[in-house]
Amino acid sequence: MNEEKFGFETEAIRTQLERTQYLEHSVPLYLTSSFVFEDAEDMRASFAEEKDRNIYSRYSNPNTNEFVEKVCKMEGATAGFAFASGMAAVYSTLAALLKSGDHIVSSSSVFGATHSLFINYFPKWNIQTSYFDINEPETIESFITPDTKILFAESPTNPAVDIIDLELLGKIAKKHNLILVIDNCFATPYLQQPIKWGAHLVVHSATKLMDGQGRVLGGVTVGEPELIHKIYLFSRLTGPSLSPFNAWVLSKSLETLAIRLDRHCENAMKVAEFLEQHPNVNRVKYPFLKSHPQYEIAQKQMKAGGNIVAFEIKGGLEAGRNFLDKIKLCSLSPNLGDTRTIVTHPASTTHSKLSVDERLAVSITDGLVRVSVGLETVKDVIADLEQALD
Ligand SMILES: *Cc1c(COP(=O)(O)O)cnc(C)c1O
Image 1 (cartoon, rainbow, N blue to C red):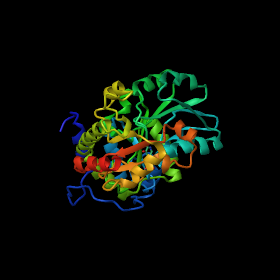
Image 2 (image 1 turned 30 degrees about the horizontal axis):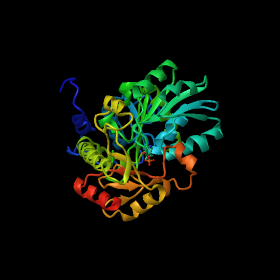
Image 3 (image 1 turned 30 degrees about the vertical axis):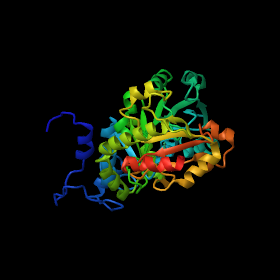
Image 4 (image 1 turned 90 degrees about the vertical axis):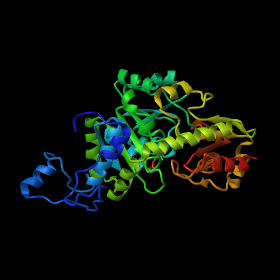
């Protein structure tokens, strides 16, 4: 075949390793911790990075290579590295690129563990983070100092489902010579490709929609080759690499990402429309509902609204707890992006240790409920939410 560019689904399905002597159709699992060399010179050249080959599975493995290659094709990137979890990807990416004295500007609403890393750990190495309010993007530049190296954001955000204008972030990063890192976990490359808008690096928790079936943890960072090389050198030393088995599972999952996402988004839209007209619901946030404050931006940068719906239940903390207790079909679980619909009420569960002000700082109000809409028959999901709300 010639140089013609294939469609997203074709790349997801047909990007694979060369077949072995057995001519298998589906890529096999390479459970091996190391690889062998022809002779001393082969070994020397491999370690000196003069050869592009597998050495040791902490560095690379055929299965992790295949997974990275697929994500690169899907995100429009040319290089990447696969991690044991999304947090390993976030941490290793930033730790590899930053040094003492550097500064990060981040959106206020980021994944909880990322937030804790920024406020509890990076300051130990004299790396400080400033937060901009997602609803005040015009203030972003005021946080940038001569020490700022990284602009970091998620969109849509967890759990409030706010949207940030990626094009604007791309322009700001370019103007101030910053590395723009986008956590694209909620959208996946099927719905949104941050590199198109100027992101230098895209990080993912592959645990969520990429696996999509709640089985394995994984993470990946893709983007500019020089940056990825630094991340690779740091990671091959420190050991956060993805296991071959999880990479094998994730590569298979990516083959169905597009078709799963289509249904996830279709179901989520129906759930959002149902919630919007329910009398016990104050406010629904779903990127593709006209009522979403950043609806126009979502339309510009996303193909569909994703599978996460956030809503504000009337009655605050108590009502949220009661709602969870009445749920029958859906799962109460900290995961998201699964075939099974999951509901969470952060204020009374995952974020109950925080004060009200601390919660509000990360956009968690007392009545906020997050629904990760799954792939069940959507009328069954709506019926469950309805009986719990009534
Ligand atoms: C879950 C999540 C992570 C962390 O991923 P793990 O695979 O659980 O380590 C990072 N960012 C976002 C937006 C997430 O939802």
